[in-house]
Image 1 (tube, rainbow, N blue to C red):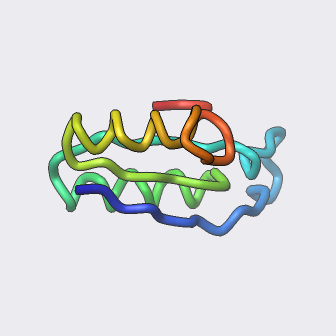
Image 2: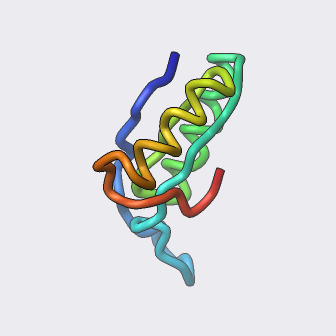
Length: 77
């Protein structure tokens, strides 16, 4: 099972970086921790966060992103 979450892409005020174009895959079996990580990444301005709750789902998301008509690979997993 996996969740595709779109975070709000915005530059953090005063930050010397822009993570709005980054795409991150989070693999975490705890929904609480996954939501916590998603929230932190959103506050940092990461553009897109996908969450996988198991390895099979993560592999599926990666294969879709790379070759299955997705919009490119992940910048960080």
